[in-house]
Structure formats: structure tokens, C-alpha cells
Image (tube, rainbow, N blue to C red):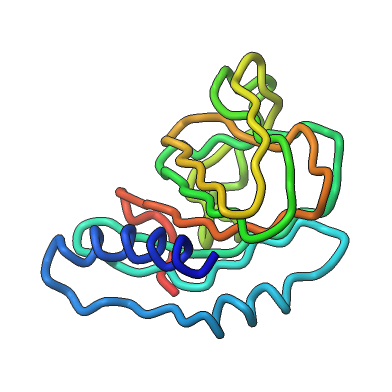
Length: 171
């Protein structure tokens, strides 16, 4: 797990830092493990660990924990690409298709300002389902609806968020 995790995080941060020869941002294993330990049980938790100016765009690294569920809810980020690295757990992730009954998130709300940038919630019509588990990575392009149709075992994943318009607050 640690080699893949380091490679995923390093790749995103190296690409970002290379834009202007900036110093690297180091997120330690202890930072990640502490964030995992602080994730509340029994509910969705999305915690941003760092969100940096990477020279013309921002890059964030966070941790998401989701309890078991069998209901599909989706989100679509209008300005961000996300990369997931599954640390533990299993689920069926649906991506693509069309966001149905979209409900924009409050542009002044905490989620938009500190995590996702402009986004909408809804359902998914169509899309591709895939089972994901420990060690898997998924790249979710901007404007691709995505959500879990089933989480069979509480899932925890690291998310790298590429914020080209620098809309999310730095951390």
C-alpha cells in the first residue's frame, strides 16, 4: 500500500510543483494515519489534509471515509478533477453518464469553499459501474458525475483534487 500511495501522491504533487520550481509539499504517513484515525465512524467524512497553490492551479489532498450503503447519490464537480486511492474497504463506484435532477451546492457553503469548488448533487443516469477496493486508483475527470451505488465494507480513500481555477481555499 505505501509504495502505491507514495507514488500517487508524489506524482500529483511533483507535476504541480514542476510548474514553477516550487518547493515540494510533504504530507507524512503520520498526517494521513492521524486523519484516518480522526474520521468519524458511521457517517461520511471528507477531510482536506492540504490544499496548495501549485503555480497557476491548486492541488489538494484529502481523505474520505464512507460507511456501508446501498443508495446511489452522485456529485459532479464543475471545475475539479479527482484521483482516488483506496486505502481500505470495498464498494461499487459509478462514474460518467448524466447527472439527474441536479441540485447545485451552496457556492458560499463550506463544501464548495474548502473541498470541491462549484458542484451539484443528484442521481446518475447511465454511467459505468466498477468494484473498487484496497490499492485501486480511479481518475474522475471534471464534470463526470460519480457516486457509490453500494459500499459493502466501509471505504476509506485518499483523494487528490486538481483545482485549475484556484477556487478552493488553501490549507
